[in-house]
Image (cartoon, rainbow, N blue to C red; front, side, top):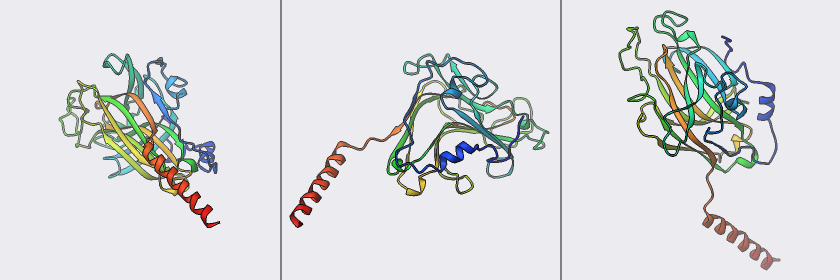
Length: 279
């Protein structure tokens, strides 16, 4: 497996996009129900063509609390391989149709195996499958919402690190989790995360689909030129169950109520009248 140091795989074109000085909005609407996609394995496939990419980082112990080992990506998203993502079917409801997106850990990565790189209990694999856009000047002041349907394949949600391993391994209760997120990243400040809005998907229902929504306010002027990512995250280890189903993904701006537009137009009109009287 190709192992890249953190941020080592960021391409020159990605950096150039971050430095855009255009005054037009760059963040765009994304809507997907996965019905028209055909499972195709490794890229190129319908997921990668649609803009989905993956990233992974590896930790000796819990993510963010123990020793960082390495990272890899971003890569075009695979479809139906043992790692990251797949277009799946068979458990859709009335509103989900025949197909949806299955997001799971990178089971291709052998470093989660006990007695390997991270010692007795295996490494923790932190994986993300996401869309990425660049915030431009025209986006400042807008609010964007990610709405989606989700369902767990497993009774009680994914293995969360508190259960006894079925294989008798020496698992030390490193927490496993799943989440959906919208985040912003500053490429001019060592790719630091400047916003990270999440909803926990670890213990959602495995019998009923539910709809979830999270929003991010892009009002801060310093966000211009930063990267915006939305997608799904999994933290797992030792090949435990980690998958979550997602469908009807809708990423769009929150519309400004008509009353506010009328109020703003009224203010402009009053200002115009005041100026004419003062002339």
